[in-house]
Amino acid sequence: MTTINEHNQLIKTARVTGIWYLLLAITGVFGFMVFNSQVYSPDANETLNNLIENQSTARIRLLFEFGIIISQALTAIWFYRLFKGINDWAALATAIWGTVNSSIILISAISMGVAIKLSSSNLIADNLIIIETLQAIIANAWLIGGLFFGLWLLPFGYIITSSKRMPVWLGRILILGGFGYIISTFLSYGGFSADWVGYFQIPASIGEFWMIGYLLIFGIRPAENS
Image (cartoon, rainbow, N blue to C red; front, top):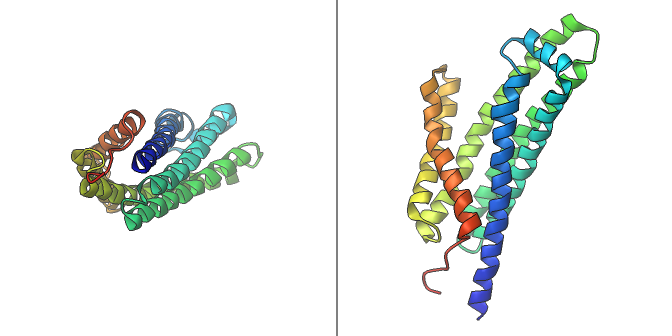
């Protein structure tokens, strides 16, 4: 009976983890893929115009960035709660690398807040240089964050493949996606800017949405010896 109760509690933890992970996906899609291009452009002058003329959109983009930071940190912590009884060191690595990634994205959020503040100033010429610098910080925070986003996929992918508490192929795809994120970051900083660099991140996207669905629908399997 105790084992059954413990597993039921673990399923509840898995579903809460799935909710946080789903929120991370939603805020990431809307913040980075939908609203980001409406505000931030490779041209600093265009970005400044967007910040001045569409400040409400810029603030929505910043709020989604807050959502990414919070949901990433909470997802990392709940993964630790979920997996610590299976493999404590791998669960801890997941929590650490996930929260580090969240902290790096915090730098992006700070830069966005400063950019919005500067857009209200009258010193347009000086602000253009600062806006260009802030854009570079935002872009590089996300690129560097890719290293730790890749790293955090590796330990919980390993937990899944070694414990078989979730589909083994889910774990394998997450591990592949983790390495894909790391490789794409190295390639980007190595001077490769072609579209194919982003293809390395596709396994991570597949694995993450599979993971979210599994957590919300099934939770986690009981241990094989229970």
